[in-house]
Length: 99
Image 1 (cartoon, rainbow, N blue to C red):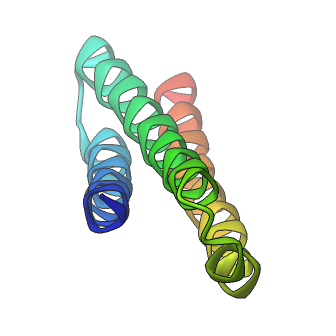
Image 2 (cartoon, rainbow, N blue to C red; image 1 turned 180 degrees about the vertical axis):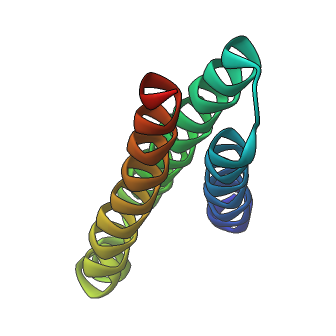
């Protein structure tokens, strides 16, 4: 179960960055760019939720030493995921409001 949550979170994070990059490179169509930006945020949220579910799963199976050992990795991952997603989506926003 832990592997499912971690791999799913990783893939959702990559999809979040992919949709944000696609929103930045989307030329001319505001609705398409906005849709891609929205999908980027959706996948970012799903990635975070999967990490929270993974931590809950470890607590539910009483693997508290694993939680104590690995708690910093999801925190750093969340900061990086949100920072890059936010940066790309803000860049897309300024691109569309400038033109």
